Length: 274
Image (cartoon, rainbow, N blue to C red; front, top):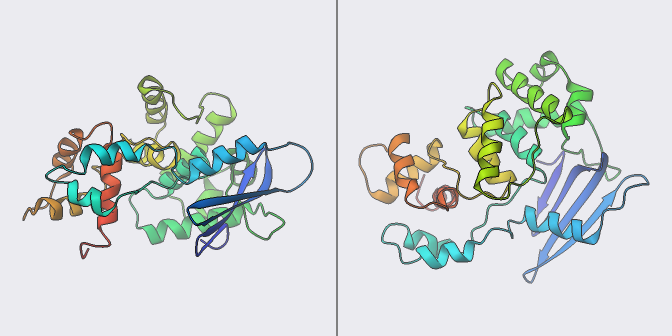
């Protein structure tokens, strides 16, 4: 999406908000090494080398222990060949959990292309631009400041339900009643899930996607995803369509890696003819 991020060859440039200021994050990969650069507009807060490295490791999915997963399942009778073919698969992360959650809300029950179009209009309407020219994906404060009404979000293409869900998320974060921080342990994961489920318009599909793409959480269940079910049908060589219920039961066997198995099924889409 060229207005806020540019991906070419082995490099990504991404406009983000850090410490309330427009920032340009560049990650270039060459010879299995990543070079990271960060340019924050204005004077003030110092972003340490440790924070920058941590952000890059997060976005590249390097915090995901995929080697343990592959060691355990490469000989599995059903998914072993898939895991072996796609060895090293990691789930690239959004720059922030809020970005992942807002993207998941936008993407509810519509095509990827439609979601991209709405997201583009959303970022353009807020209009926070880094000095490099790239627009920045907003944090919750920018949403409240520039698009703080249902009508404003509707003009970007949001449905009434999605607009209100996103606004409620932003207001809860701003009031200190919702914290989108990386959970430590399953108890904190469950507390985050319960907090998000209490917000009208947010269900388990949105939560599982957010956990996967914003929190490096690999045990969410992606049984509600059509591509996952379709490719599971292909993998199982099953004539009938695989239901969400069947997929959920099948994925339970791979805990605590359910979402990573789902991601392997996603990736299979490009090589299975679908």
